[in-house]
Image 1 (cartoon, one colour):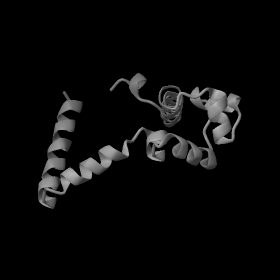
Image 2: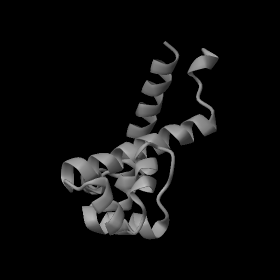
Image 3: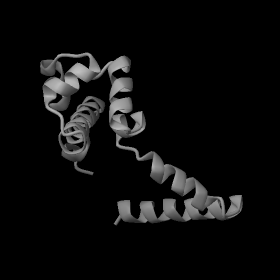
Image 4: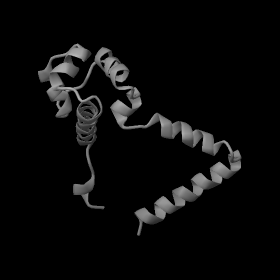
Length: 120
């Protein structure tokens, strides 16, 4: 495997921070239709700091993250990791129709497919 394609843990963390910042900017601009200053005031932070967060150079503290969750209507899972709670709930509901052995077999099949793809 090419070592240039392997990301270090710090590179992965930076990549996640950048993605998180872009999600927050997307929420602010396209959903809330707020200026940086207005949202920063709502969150109790400076607009300069919000700019750093949106650029992937800063992180919101718990209190500000909770306020963003309340203002935007998005879950903290979505804001932090891009996980859509609605999809998770739909998936859980869908999986309830299968037995445990069927799910185990499906997971084993996915593992074999992933192994095949990785090695070919």
